[in-house]
Length: 190
Image 1 (cartoon, rainbow, N blue to C red):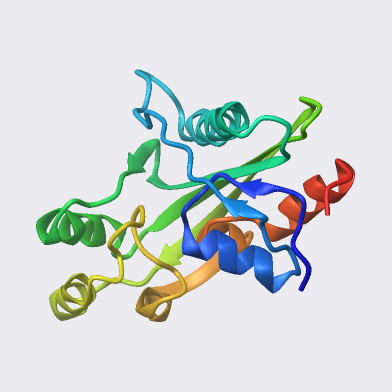
Image 2 (tube, helix red, strand yellow; image 1 turned 180 degrees about the vertical axis):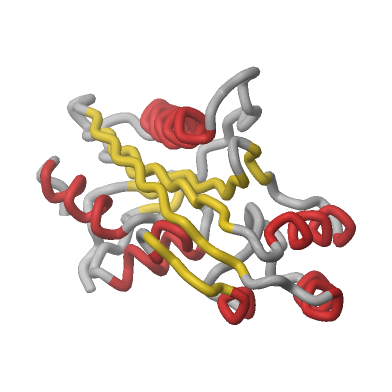
């Protein structure tokens, strides 16, 4: 595989692996350190698009004259955005909230070309989770594969709890590949 002409503004191993799966190897991984606080009354779609854009802008500022790719993904129930759990108790609450319900996973991607041209895409997917037993919740929480993720890691053992997915599986993992590849190609970046 040849190295692609962009910097990935994310430290997510899932995003890097997804890109490599379709032949894109970032020339550099440079996570953008930004404030990820939700603004008052901000809706999930607006939030995730803003996060992807702000990460791309920060990375472009830190890496002048480079093409930048940034992404952000959130899980939400209704308009409630689920943030990364800090401990087992918080994750147990998340699992109880998701049990027997549908949630939305919203993933945004932003590309800034070295000439300043910007493009952005956003994808919303629906994930329906089966009703979880206390034991299933405890086993998932104790396995700690959720650490560092918002809500859950779909590509892990949580996938056994998923009754239905409508949308982009790669978007749920963390980067919608169809939209990302088309955005990169449309902006002339390989």
